[in-house]
Length: 505
Image (cartoon, rainbow, N blue to C red; front, side, top):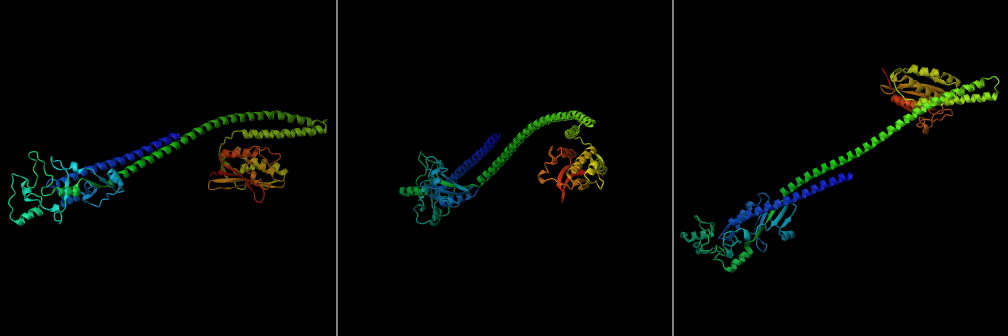
């Protein structure tokens, strides 16, 4: 069962790990798709910034790119030529050196990702038939020393639209302003400066006629836009992955708690089943012991009758007038042994008897005084001073069982003390509603190693003891819910204390 629970927990853990990996991959794919959409938008922006077919100026194009950078996840963009060199850029400087960027076209960092060659501008940007697809970026027109800054001749404008003739220039300064000024490449009228569709199957704009073939090829190699690089922020993707990781972690924790709880429940169930089996066996054993106890008690009771007959016959023999002294002495020994065995059988029957407690409000003083009177003859034989209870208390107890317990304790003390010893019964409050009852003597006391063994059946330190008197006392005490203990009596002797007797107002 534990192996099955561990297998289930392992499956849940593997499932959550696989799902989290899938979510991360899906987030990367979604980021790549968004980058492709952005690249398509950038291609449209580059196409809209072209002038004269395949030519575009760097200033307006970078301005348009800067407007896109910083919106959403796009943080930087760079336009590259066929050799992989930067032609135009917007945003922070992009490092194009990582090997994985050159090999796979993407480089994943901690907070950003660099994606390259998402759209091949040489094939996808321009769709006019017959026109070149390569976008060539011209530097700013106010840069001196560049051949590409040279304005096109007037004939270039005449070929834009044969049906519309450009208006004559007002003066040289005005014409120069129209060519080199802020309005270069823009139309002053509707449709001015735009290439018209191809006529008679001729291609559209390719190399501007004011450029030589060598200049145009050099410009294509250096300034021709072939692809670009995007830098995308990973904050949204990381937030999504972090949220998914927390969710998976909570699921794993809940699964762990469930597995541990199921394991503990299974363990408790196994222990409960084992305890039930033990209880059934113990109940059967108790029933068997009870039957044996009843059988032994019956046997002991039946044994006393022949012992009484033997005792009676020994007494008759001892009373005969013509009986020799030896016969009388042996008859007296038979009587003593019969009395000893009868006493043991009586103690055994008393010990095996079930203890049914019938609690009543009982005055403790009269009960102690009655037990002391019953043992007065034994005390007089050994000249023992037995002091009864000085203060009277009312307790809740079974009168017959309490009298028997006190009788056994006092008899045990009388047998333990030497002639001329002292025994006293003391009671005192123990808390508000309880008291304890002591039987104290100045005898030899009980060794510390025997103070817990002395209440076991047939354990005795006296020569003539049966070993059942204190065991019977313990039975009575436990049936009432009290406690009994053997304590040392300083400077000499022993104390048998009954505690937790309940007081009655």
